[in-house]
Figure (cartoon, one colour):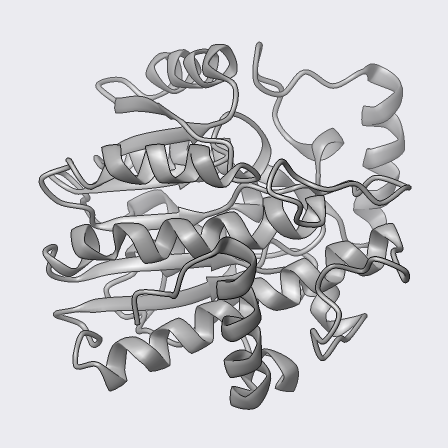
Length: 311
């Protein structure tokens, strides 16, 4: 089925939560979903930035329905509090696992829960959040979870045996590992949903997306949300010649995975030309689909978050 970003399926009456929605990919994912009529919950660490993003969406999308929710995905206590509030929603049609660290720290650091910080932010908090809000997704026919992966999974690989990287930390290794984990999680979640009889079009479906090479300097400027220095815009414009795109375009695959009626659980969406382009279905890496790696990942993640996954 063809996909037209300018004629998105009507989402009126549907509620979708987007983590890390105050800037970058999360903001544009939220704006595009709101433009289709969805009520979008901006789940963000900083309440002031979340309020600014909500105001920006209302200003750019007439009649937009948005609200905010405080959530720091790197803090498991915050995740549990946010999940409790999400369970109060009458229905939850979509959960977009977007929040994350894009530029990893040079030196290893850990979250309040003792988890390597990049992994905690990009993956383990989302693992726990999804498990805790599964009842809200289950009571909402046709609900979807979309895990945000990365094209770095094609450039670097990991069997995910050393999640904490206590003696082997490298910033880009940590980032790649966290995104490979997110992809493996998204595909394994869909398998588990189907095995439990909870998946399929009328149940809960899990999909994975990646934004290609999306950078700030090619992204439309929005006061309080995306304000880029002239020098960075110049440098990033040059990167456009080698395949970069704006984060507004980088949000397209996630939006398609979340609301395309033809999309089904277990699918992977990204830019048509890998780094940029219209949203298209793509083939995931072998590691992302490896069931043995996924099973091992779930078991070790359960140890890190201190409780078993709901499935």
